[in-house]
Length: 381
Image 1 (cartoon, helix red, strand yellow):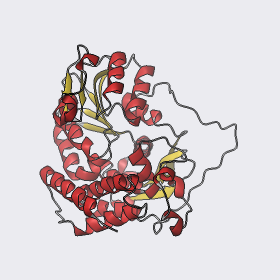
Image 2: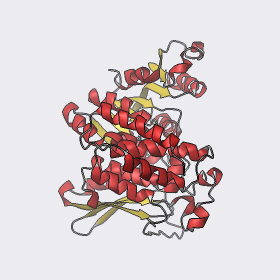
Image 3: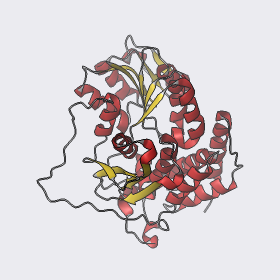
């Protein structure tokens, strides 16, 4: 039996995790759940899964949240409440699915306690890759990726030795604007950018997919997660979202992980690893004709991708700054305050103007995060 805490249980990853738990209650049990503000859904999840403790990340809800909706369950608030659940002695597997840099501290708390972490919060390694990987070695904690692309690489790596890996190839759907002209991108609206062709995701990650910033962040994450040189990471557009990523070995063999696009499959693999339990997701139908396309990305049209490779090479404070600038830029775009093409522009400007530190402490990374957010809020086209 694995005893789980889900950080971000009301989001798209968190609710998919609970689908997996429902299907495998004989192997998985819930000890802790956290949400940001959605206490209504969190309360319903408590009624069903009966965790030992829950928390709301928004500390301002401490006065207003009706505690009688959580009978017999300790209810924490703010970052401290999240960290208490992540480090609970009753928990051995922590799903880190809080969106953005806000998920870093909870992941760090789990790592400090030597737990196994199912990582869906890519910002943990984007912001603090070197520090996190060092702390993992020291504490004995384990990271298992949940993002479909990194989980696919993780699965494919089981087919060979790490020293025989030539490169990994991360696939990208291309988002809703693949093939657009520059003039068309300048007229993109938030409504059109939120319509993803193959995946059903949260608002922020859907915009990141449209700009290809999501793939940029995945490049940075892969560099630390798999201990690769940046030159060993490639990206290819695959509109069908059937091949979730690939590993090429030094003999020329390419191992791909394939399945219909459904996050519950990589989540289940992470939760049940090293076992494979019966799946709850749709299967590929090879009785129907299908076409799989692989197309080089247009880096001029989607400059965010080059930012990811640059930041993966430079390291230091660059990941914290890029991630923070992008989070605020996406928020401003959704509010109608920036255009779609402004998102990579402001990220480039803020990254270029920050005070680079090649070996920052965790406190310095958070300071740079705050600085980059303020700079992005003040940026004007």
